[in-house]
Image (cartoon, rainbow, N blue to C red):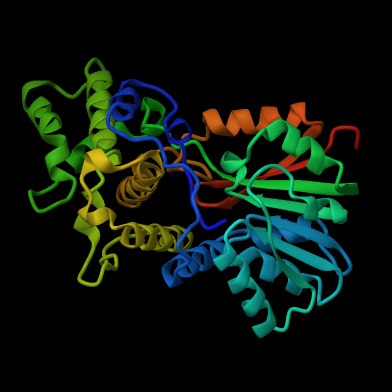
Amino acid sequence: MCFAFVSIAAVLSGGEDANNLKKTVNEAPPLQQSSFSDKLIQRQSVRAMNSNIPRLMDDLGIKPGMSILDVGAGSGQYAYLFARRLRNTGAVYATDVDPGAVEYVKKEGQRQKLLNLYSVLVTKDGVDPFYEKHRYDLIFLSHVYVYLQDRIEYLRRMRGLLTDNGRFVAVYMNGLAPFTDEDIRDIDNLVKELVQETPESPFYKYFNELRSKTVSLPFDDATKVEFRKTVREGFNKILYDPYFCKSFLVKGGALNKDVAFTEREKKSAQWLLIFFEEEGLFNKKREDFHSKEFGIVMTLNRLLIGQRFRRYLRDGEHPYLTGKDGYWQNMMKEDFKKAGYRLERQYDFAPFETAAVFVKADKE
């Protein structure tokens, strides 16, 4: 689908900061026909290139002759990869509710000589009759779950379209919550570095209170709890600031050379910035942001905080994440369970994204 959606419940998982943000953010607008644009194609292409789709296909044993359904395929970036993996055998059905997307995928598939790729226009209401004409070894759903109507019934009907060993893969955004005390690993050195930030630093204005406390309070075991709280609150002010990232941009909208992203983070930030430009977020009033847009803001700001202070923050595969599923993620998994599926495994699909692999519950 031609949309990147993050619900307010998904990006916020609790806390005073989260409650304050909920008061200022509009819920995402209803699903509408998208305007299919070159920027959208570029954004989806960057996103696909940054994903772990090759590993996913390897682990799932995707091979020639299979039948794959890509629901809400958008510009078809994953569908092309599936079709090439099948080596012009089997079938990849790329469906979407947007006529512009369907026509684009059809022409691009022809240009790439993907004879096993079929681009199909479907209705957004329930299970389209087209789906029931085939059986699938893989049903792939990327950032589409939140748009489904009567989700449990939809998933139950789609379950009947899987082959005996078929899998249903749902890609979703991880729950992006405010910073917690547990996210700060080395408070001693983090405080020392933060108070040395100069007025020219994008971080400087968010830690005025911290600088005051280092003057008035001793920094010892008794006060560390207070300092940790102050740092956490400063990071969360940044997290919700839709204009913070502008300080890291040079003319033309590119990130300045001092930003120390990893390669994966750099690619993730690239598609986030494309979204910023495409939606005109740099010139938008804060009160006009809706939840999808604030999800993008929080994601980019979390990356920017992480690249600057990662050595003081939580270790692990996702040092910039809480590692906790949010409201939408938990509800999605519960819906799959009610519809007769079992969660088989999960993948780190891209920064801030997870691919959940489901099988029929009666399959061992």
